[in-house]
Amino acid sequence: MKQYHLHCLVLLIMNLSSTANAQSFSDVEMIVHPVNKNVSYIEGRGGNIGVIYGEDGILLIDDQYAPLTEKIIEAISNFSSEPIRFIINTHMHPDHTGGNENFGKRGALIVGHENVRSQMKVAGYDQTPPFVTFSKDVNFHINDENIHVFKVPNAHTNNDSFIKFTNANVIHTGDVFRSESYPYIDANNGGSFLGTIEVYELLISLCDENTKIIPGHGKQTTVETVKLAIEMLQEIKSRIQLMIKEGKDLDEILRSDISVDYDNRWDSGRRIGGARGMISVAFSELIKL
Ligand SMILES: [Zn+2]
Image (cartoon, rainbow, N blue to C red):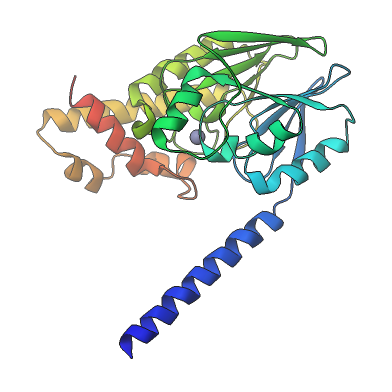
C-alpha cells in the first residue's frame, strides 16, 4: 500500500512537472528591447537574444530553447521581414543553443567558437552544435555594421565569446556577465572564477560610457554595472583568501556570511549558481594559489 501511494505520488509529481514545463514555454512572452540603431535584444526564456536586422538579412546571437523558435520568429516578424541568415552561439548552454536545430533547418548558418562544438560533445549535449567554427575570432560585415565575434579567456565556460557591434557601440557578453545575478561559473565545462575577473577587466577596457551591454541574462546595462560587479568579485575573493589563510575549509566558508552584504544586489536565488556556487568554485581555485 505504501509503495502504491509512493508510486502515485511520483507519477503525480512527474505529471505536474511535465505540465509545468509545457506551460512554462507556452506562457513565455517575447519582449523586444531596442538597444541602438538596428540592434535589439529579445527577452524570453533563457539567454537574451541579440538581433541585428537590415537589408542584408538578420543575424541573431543565441536562440534560447527549441520550443520557443516560432515565438522568436514571430517577434522578429513585427520589425523585419528579412530572412534569419546567421546565428552566433555565445557558448554551449542549452538555454542559448536549443534553437540551433530549428533555425539551421530553416537555412541559418550557425557559428560559434570551436570549443562550443567540442565541449558540447564532451558534455554529452544533444543540441545541434555550430556548423561553422572559428579558433580566435570572426567578423560579419552586414547591415552597415562590423560585428566582431571573439573568444574570451575561460570564464563562464571554456567556450565563451563576446560580440561587439562596432558602429552601434553594443557588446553582447553571453553568460560571462549577468546584470542582476552573481556570475555562474560552470567549472565542469571549463569555467573559471579568476578567469571571470580577468574577462570583466577586458570588458571594462572595451567599453566607453555610452557602450550598451546586453548581458546573457538580465536587463541591458552599461560599464558602471560591470565595475560594481568586479568590485564585488574582488572583495569576495579577498574574503575567501583571508579565511583560507586562517585555515578554514570550504564548509566553514559557506557557513559564514561572506557574501551577505552583496546578496540583495546579486543573488535573488532565482538563477542557477548563486553565491554558494560561485564561492565553491572560487575556493577551489584560490586554495591552489
Ligand atoms: Zn550559460
